[in-house]
Length: 572
Image (cartoon, rainbow, N blue to C red; front, side, top):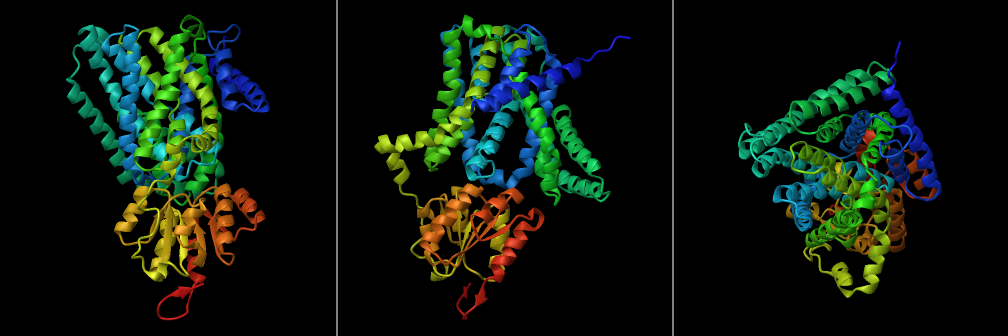
């Protein structure tokens, strides 16, 4: 009896080679991601020895994309994304347009027609969400303002790329004739785009209206059984099932479907347990994503077209990054945010592969063009960790060498300090609340119920602008910078409540706060027991990490620390 072990052999060799090369990479102080890519090249068709099944590897990598995007949705709410819409939407659209033009100009130089040039440029414009998430998680900045801007930016890119896929068959019909790709009987372009937008909008509405009620309820019912494996199964089934539904029924994509599934599940009190239970699956299958990228790579392209490959990599790493940084600075965000977002976009990935594959199928792109895109993807993904590591040194170098960089850092920001008309109750004995996300808003609500004055310090400029319009005291900036804490009048504050940030940021805030106000009480949140242990080791205030009741408990604690001293105010 003949047995076919293609699936098992592909997984076995993929994981095995990824483990060996990832371990070697880490020992050489190179990101393990590079090892995973090399593992894919070794088991791919371009090298001798075992050859994995590319179709199976591709489907397994899709599972990695689904689970990773599901995890992102569990950590980022719709409110978080809407909070950065004013920079993410115009920024992503402008950056994609500029990168597409650069790619088109390059393709025109090579003698390609306008249709080929357009899809080639478009393929270079959309970054990989998977690579971005892994990079942000590795640096602990996924849930920071910089991380939310970068993720929001790429979600907009993903939506734009879904619509761009609709353009490929009509473009083939336009440039290659009505018989290209069997596109002669297709509907007009405007009708196809409208239909796609209607499908995507219907899916989003369905998730936000019905999904927000049904999925948390379903998860709660499963948790009541007390079965851990059944709970894990429910989480994975929901993530994959919704992603599949989004792709097949609503013409969206696996990634977007999984992302919205995670955002909806976040409404459940069991969301953090769901994130923990699905983490091993996300990590394992995300490795297969990078292995599958390596399997697609044709090393021969580096020998046959080295200059063309370098030009493609230059557009991806330098061209896209530069325009993204300029756009972020134009929105008056600090240089650190500009450099972080630009590093996030200095690579391409899964949607570029899909665009290239569809374009080849309808005859709008040659195999040479797809090979160049794959080469650019692999090289940019491998170099992306290096690009991220260069952010801080580059910032220091720019500030040291160039006066324009120092002017950008010193430029006047109207929301960087409280207005002169601010009531005195916000300047003495107040709470300084760092972060105005889900937890921060709950704490602020508890303070408002007791008429306890507070000043918000927030990195989201639009959020600060909205708070000012509501008549609330808020300053814009990174609270790890003592200047921001000074503007929040930390020297005369009673409590510093840190509702977001990594342990490193908390330590910097605590040190600066106690230098300016030795008697201040510090209350912080942590994301897990490990963070709590680290913070307690630093002797940092009161720590909360009960995720289900974190916002409520922090708010109640801060309120209880205040007692009325007269009819005019409260003091700790």
